[in-house]
Structures are given as C-alpha cells and as structure tokens.
Image (cartoon, rainbow over all chains, first blue to last red; front, side, top):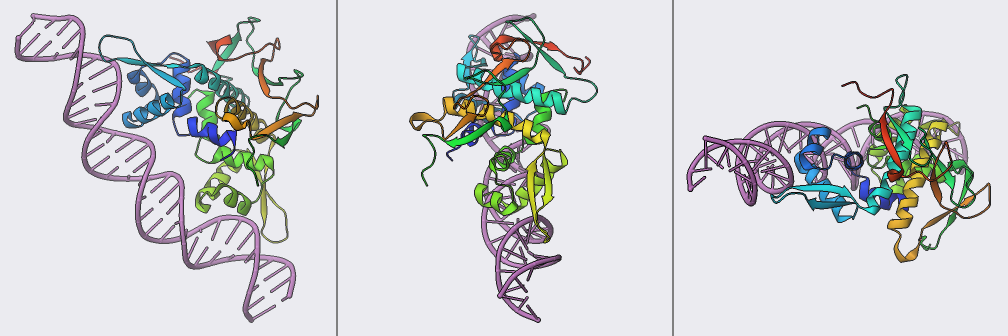
Length: 143
Length: 143
DNA sequence: GTTCAGGGTTCCCTGAGGGAACTCCGACTG
DNA sequence: CAGTCGGAGTTCCCTCAGGGAACCCTGAAC
C-alpha cells in the first residue's frame, strides 16, 4: 500500500512490537528481561524480535562468550522512538487522569522537564493535523 | 500498566485502528467507504469503530433521515493524528525508497511543503530519543 | 409493495497468540 | 569431569480473534 502509515505499521504494527521497542529504549535489552517485563509468550517474543531485527530497527548483539544476546536500537530504530514519544504525549494528556504522567522527559539542551511538540521543519511553527493540506507526493500510487 | 504508551496502544493498538483513523482523517468517514478502502472484514470494522467511539476518539454522527452514519474525529482524535503524522515522517524517511513519499504536507502557516519535526515545548530546540533523560513522574507506579 | 443502499450481524473456519514444557550450549561448582 | 545453572530460544497443544460470505433491518424512492 502506498502509504507511509501502513508501511510503518508493517514494522511496528503487530501487537507487542511498540512495547518491545519501549523496553529496549529504556534499557531492557535481553530476552529474559523483555519476557518477564511484558508477560509476552516466549514464542511471540522470538517472532517479534526477529522481525524487528529483519527490518533493521533492532540489532542482535552477543554480550558474552556464552550464547547470550542483547537487542539494541539501530539509528533507524532510534528514530522510530519519536513515534513512541508522541504516543506518550497523547497518553499523558488524555489518559493519565488525576495521577499525572508516569514518566517525565528532561531535555538535555535546556535542562527542563518538557513535553514534545510537533513543529514545521521549515518555519518552526506548530504543525498539527488541522494545520496542513495533504498533497500527492512523488511516490503516490498512479490512478 | 502505568505507561502512556501502553495506554495509547489500548486505544489504537489493535490491528486496523491506525488505518481507520488515517482514513477518517483524509475524509473517508462512512462504513462502506472504510470497508472498501481497507479491505477489512465488516465484523472487525464494526468492533474497531465502536471501540474508537467508546474511547472518545471518533464520534458517530447521523447524516440522513435514514439510518446512515458517518464517523468524525473528536478533538481527542485529532490530536491522536499527531502520532500518525510522525509515523508518516518515519515511513517517508526509511521506507519510501526511490519513489519518494506518497503524500506531502503543506503547512498552512508558511505555505511550504515540509516535514514535521519534534521540538521541546519549553525551549523549541529539537527533541528526540537521544536528547532526553527519563524521570519518574507523579503517576509512576509505586514500587 | 417492491426494490435499493447503507450499515451492520451471524455463521463457520482458519491461523495467530498464550502457556507450559522441552532443548541447547557454554560456564561454574565440587 | 559429571552435574547443574541460566539465558535464549523451540515445540506442542488449545483457545479465541480475524477473514469471508451470507443474511438482516430500516427508511426512502420508484
């Protein structure tokens, strides 16, 4: 499907995949850790990890002489975490309730705790769903 | 789970839900349109639409004296489209290949075709996965 | 009063996910 | 140097969610 959303979902759209990515992001990188933290079945965890490695989002890397492996984010995977960060922003805003957000971000550049915001890469002003028109691009499907 | 990603996935984490949201975003708002465009089974489409309405992301609205309904984004749903926009950005960058992005965004504020960028809401500088520390927030699970 | 179209239900059937047990392999342990 | 440990998967069975196709319901139009 000529749709970057569908293509992205083909990488992280299966159940558990985003949560696996989150865990790797926050430092849970080994099979047993992931399985214990998520409560996912081992079979599915194996499938998902292989898929994410195949797609170049994670790298499987030995960390011992024994057959032990850890999973780390590639550059491609690290950029995918942007999607998770925006999910967090939405969840914090609409689903966190009284208790407030479970996790805060401290921005290295300014040292402040702050939310992430979507901006236009060209002019720097806010850019959300209502602020844009959609145009067919070069990769659009020909009718 | 005290995790805004998991909570957000509880709303749009099921298969098809993000694509339904995308279709509604771009103007496909009726049951038959969605079913035809996505090729999803009618049963699952019914389930997903009900779920999205229950969660306050879509609104089911009659558009005729006959029992005809269209689905439109609520404010909550419109903000959720931010997540899709970032998915598009990642898909355009890593998955579009030679053909280039299938869809372009023209920003109302500046009139330019531009990508979306993640910025710190406090200082305005870029804010990506590697630019932040994670801190426990008020809604964090107590150990 | 029959047809039509949109918007769903119902039915069956297959395949993906959960759970628990099993395997494999290198390193320690006595 | 046999036994055992622990991480990282495999294998097996079983259930339940998703696909497909047919069916139903309703109000308007012919």
